[in-house]
Length: 378
Ligand code: ATP
Ligand code: MN
Ligand code: MN
View 1 (cartoon, rainbow, N blue to C red):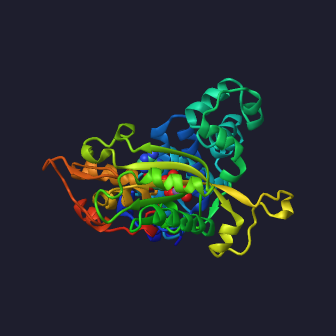
View 2: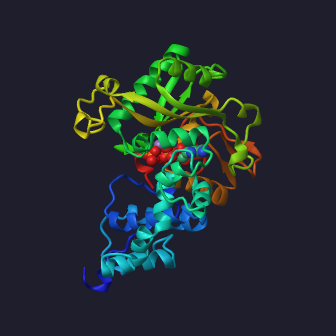
View 3: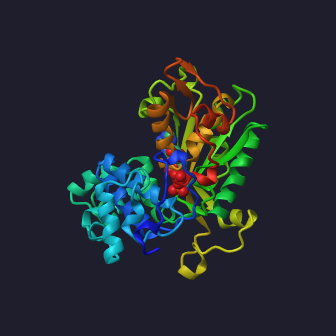
């Protein structure tokens, strides 16, 4: 395809929720570069730039072949001047100077290390950096007051920053199933987040819990947590009411149900035994060979409880990817004058909530083709 007229021109719809994004990515060099710039922007409180880089990366993820020439990108959506410059740099020079200098920068490295502590966000990390704290040793020496999450995050830093395998996710799943079955027979546990999208590893494991009879899920989270605690499975947990006030979901807010929607951020203690029970035969982690004989690892786990009436919305909202979710909400707002959240879909024109008992129905309400979880990896 040397002739200009023969250059393959890709056609890609502009919203990620209109596209099928599998885990197969033929442009990882480019998407890794753009993702790193997105991450740096997000860590620097430049959310707009972060989203722009994420959108650009997501477009490249759906291209059927590796990009070799800038002309192939003509007419593609979401590729701004800045992203195009980065791509051009990589195609012409093998690397982007901006990406390389970001990677090397002391500030980026410090932000990565400090936000790697569970419970530490970009704002806290930034404050610490301004106080001269750039690494974990300096943090430990600084006598900063850490909250409970951050203390757990520091204590289990290496484990929490080690990717969770599918086998480990399955082992955690068995424990959660047992907990739920013990405290409320008939309640259902669904794996959500990246593992539902078919990822083979993740930074945590996410579960959605519901009961087929509306109302039976009320008060469930504390019972699950107590059971897990009594069995010694929890290194840390914080249960919160799911509050809409934290998000910009607007009127998609069925107030009467707000107090029923609970979540728990936790750190599980996963025994090697437990993993073997779940079918994993060997572990590369905490084995005798690294001298550490610790027969368990810490794993970040998120639990969400939803009433059955909101289950489809919670399932869709917690399966991700984060960009896919953002794009769904943008599509709903900009193209359909609707407000989508992980609780409900509100039609601002008709002034009514649109019911749904499956993800398929929600896509249909939104006028979108159904995209299965494995194709939401934008
Ligand atoms: P990973 O494999 O890295 O865990 P992931 O896609 O599972 O990737 P998570 O951060 O676990 O990423 O998030 C899973 C889903 O939960 C995402 O779709 C995200 O939108 C949703 N989510 C995460 N945090 C919140 C929150 N505070 N409020 C609402 N939804 C959230
Ligand atoms: Mn996850
Ligand atoms: Mn999560």
